[in-house]
Image (cartoon, helix red, strand yellow):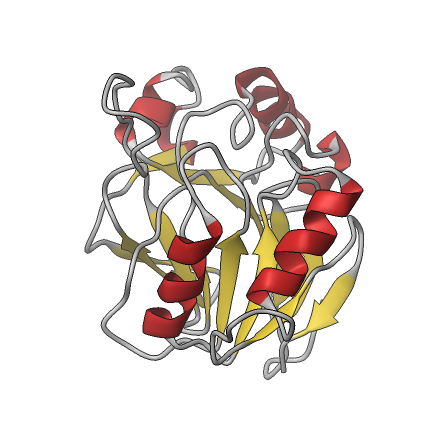
Length: 219
């Protein structure tokens, strides 16, 4: 665990990150493309929405059984799939705020980005941790406050590079950390990294692409 002024982020598979801050260890979106051990020893899991690359019911139930202190915050749809865990699962939505062992979390956004008009949209919430790190899930949610670090979903059936560039420009983070990249080949990740980084038209933010298991201290 870090000192009170520190925050460390570990990138896991696809959309999943693990954040350690003072007395809190929080994992966001440990889905099918994430190693199960990402959740081990966590105090809390935050789930943005129900899609399998962000949420796997059996894995989360197994983690809750192995760790009686594990708490889960998510939307109503996901919570309904975790019946039987009682008060360990808390339903949250846009405008809510809560605390995990001294780490403040606020909730933003309501809907998943549109994949196609013929495909029904699902609920999606984003999580802002300590006012400094924002995970939007599968949406390009904007906030009404400056944020240092944006976890940027760089590739999905619902997105294109031009939209991502404009999103980062409007969001104005100091840094963007790439997530949601499992649908890309190694070459594809390089191409998107270039477009969203120094080789592209510019976003105003530094882009970093972390390998699975790689850590970064956010200060």
